Length: 149
Image (cartoon, rainbow, N blue to C red; front, side, top):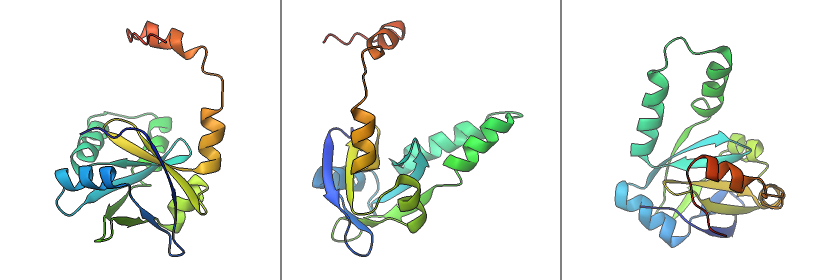
């Protein structure tokens, strides 16, 4: 399963987000009840499948004597997680805390990130993807990733 692409959506008045069919179907394929772990990071909401979230959380448990910064990071990410289920109409309800963290009011963008997806305020995402990425090719090359563009 791989989440890819961008999907532009609007929240309904109750803060519910209609997931694109391909996202909803992918979630239902790995979790019959459509569970997703939604957390806060990088100014957006990050959605993990239950299996991937368990692996991620287990990774934190293996860190012995974490630094203060790591503990603060854990507070942000693990403390910000909410377990959601997709309803019969293919929606998830975003909490007020999550919407405030990500600056979401009405218009959102769902952005595929491979094994997970992100939920952004449309305005915030435009600012992020509007930056100059010229130096990223060097970082990719240093990491051994060939990105022939």
